[in-house]
Image (cartoon, rainbow over all chains, first blue to last red; front, side, top):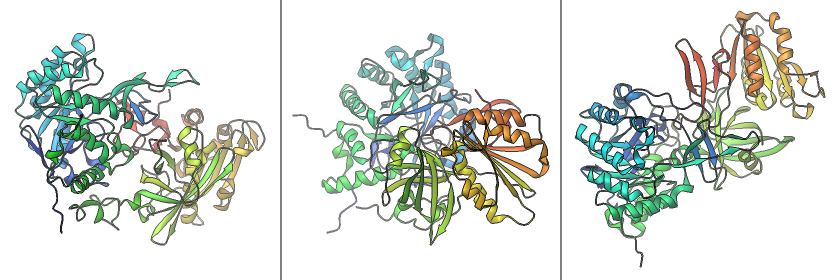
Length: 308
Length: 293
C-alpha cells in the first residue's frame, strides 16, 4: 500500500506556510549563505537577519563563545539597513517559492514604525517579525520587550504602519512571558514567536575577563530547549493567536515537541551554524513522524499534548 | 514518505560551487585515516574527503566536528595542511594544536572514525604572476596553512621561481613542525625558538627584519600566520616598507560560512574603521589593514 504524503501546511493568521519549518532570524543571513547546502524552496518560511532603519555595524569582537550545549552571542544586530535589504538582498531571495518574513527592530517607537512602513507593500515580503528585545533609547535603555506597556506600544505602532501580518518575537528574560504575550495580543499582534535568546555570561578565568567584549550575550542552542518548550506551553494557553516555537531545535524530534506543546510552527536557529542542512532534515523528519504515527495532517498534531 | 524525490537526494556529483548546487550528506562527513600526535599537544589528522575538496586552495579552511558527541557543540575552524587527489575524492591533512577543550576532543578520535566536515571555506592567498620570491613567516602552529601554500607553489614552480624562504619560530625545538616538508618543497629555512633550543634565540620576526631590506619589494610576496602578538610585530616591521604581506587570521567561529557574524575583526579602510568576517572576507587579509587591540 502506498503511503500518502501527509499534509504539512499550517496557517499563521493569514499567512500560509507549506510546512511549519522556518529559519530563525540572525542565524540564516539573508538566505544566500545557505543556498549551496539546502533547497530554500522546501522551507516553510525564511526569517531574515533583523533589519533596522539605518545599517548597523554591530558590537566589537569577540562576539561569540561556545558554552556547554550551546553558545553565547553578542553580535549587536549588525545589518545592512532597510534600504540595502530591499535593494540588494530581497531580489535574490524573492526567486524562491517560500514565504519571506522580515525581522525588524528599532531603538525608538518611531523607528519601529518607520522600518515597518518602509517594508510594507514591497513585493516578496509576506510578514514582519518584530524583535522587541531591543533597548529603548528614549526610556534609558530599558528593553521594550521586558515591559507589557512598551511591548503593547511597539506592537501597536507596527500594526498601524503596515498591512502585513505582524509576528511579535518575545524575550524569555522576563518574570512572566504570558503577561507580555497578552499585551501584544491586545495591541493587535497576529502571532507571537518565542523564545529569543536567554541572557548569559561566560568568563575567561586565566585572564579574568569576560569572553565577550559586550560582557553579556544571548544564550542559544540545545541547552535552552526545555525552557523554550515550557514558555511556549504556557503562552499557547494564555493567548488565542498562533504561537511559533523557537529555542534549541537541532532535529525533528525537538521541533515535534514544540508542535505537540501547541506551537503552530517552529524556527530553527543555532542548528543552522552547526549543520547547514538542519532545516531540510527537520522538514523530512516531521513528515516521516506523521507517516509513522498515521497522522494525515500536521494540524492534528499541534497542541495534542496529553497531560493527564 | 513523500520527499525522497526532492532536494538532498538528487544532487550527487554536482560541484559545490555551482550557484544552486548542494552538498550531499556524504560530502559533509569524512573518514579519519590517521590522527597521530606528532609533537607535544600537536596532531596530524589525515582525512578521506569527497571530491568537493579537490578545488581547495591555500589559505582555505574546514570546520571539523566530531559526530554524535555533546561537546564540542560548534565545529572548529582548522586550516588545510596538505591536499592530494584520491580517485574521485581527495585526501586532506590537518595539522593542529590541541590547545582548547574542543580540539582536545578532536585529538582523541581514531582511524576509521567519521567526522563532520564543512568546506573548503574562506578566500585564499593571492598569488601574483610576477612573484619571484615567496617569503613565508610562521609562528607555532601557524606553519600549517603555509605548508599547503608551499606545496602548491612548489608544484607550480619554474626555474624562474618563485624561490621560497621560510622563517619559522616556536617556543622550543619540540614545537617546530613542518620543516622537513618545507625543505622537500625546496624552501630555504631559517629557525628561531624562544628558548634557543634550535636556531636563533628570540622571536622569528627578528630574523625576518634582518633580511627585509634584501628583498625586492615588487617581486616578493610575504605570507604570514601565527599568534596575534607575532602578527602585530610583523605589521610594525613592514609598516614603512613597500613589501606586500598577506596574513591568515584566526578567530572563534560558529558557522564558518558568513551567517553567524561571530568572527569579526577590525580593519582600517580609506573610509575609516570597518568590521570584516574572518570566515568569508578572509581568512586571508592584507596585514596592513588589520587593527590590533
